[in-house]
Length: 294
Image (cartoon, rainbow, N blue to C red; front, top):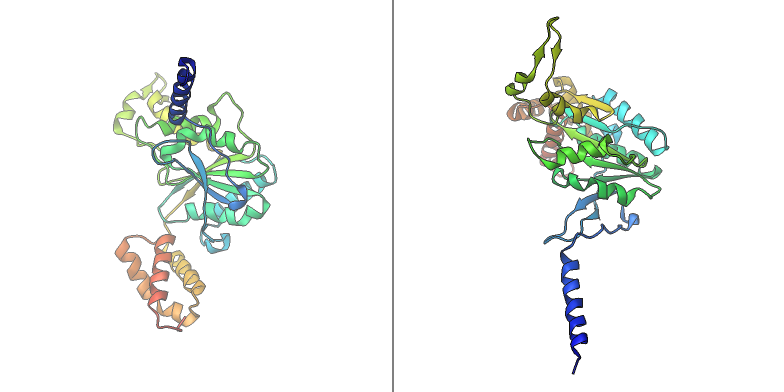
């Protein structure tokens, strides 16, 4: 029969195991040979977050993105500097929906993966864990872009402050092998209200002093060193993108020309002439062609 001391030790060990199960655990390092892109994931029911390798990465290339040449040149140059170990900036891509913001970041990954670029996609809800992600990859030889897609915040969201600190607000220096690339449909990432203007003040000379509320709302965007703005496409730009994607599906010049009217009707129905709409039309149109036609 076990002594009281032995019984106590068994019970203490069982208690410690239960406590360890509910305490936050350090993220496990993934197998970096599994791919070039990863997602930051939380385990169901709690437990340590982890990096999940993306099995099927979008194969979009920089050459597939038309009519955004200035934006493409700037982010390509910034990313090239980064993978070569040169100084480079965090990037905020803002503007019209469907104009290639997210696709441009994915294309950069495909362009520079051979040079050691890796991408980690992080949901807005998980931005509070950015320090853990940075610590996890800080000692790696690869260069990591943390990708935050369709970013925007409402009042009081914790991810806002976490991202702000991660950009350049922490006492710790930024890791030189990590950049943050984010996309958003609005430039200042937080909603602007008429009530914000109540804190503006005028002095006797007529100078305008923005209040602290407005300063707070624009301060996050200003922490990105490079801003890229995207605008709705003109009709000819939209048709050019349609032609590119139809050609990628094997359509010849005659078939592409014949699809012009349908492409315009498709855009009219959706109220947008974006690159995304062009891609969706091309898939629909090419898929409906008779077998062997493209």
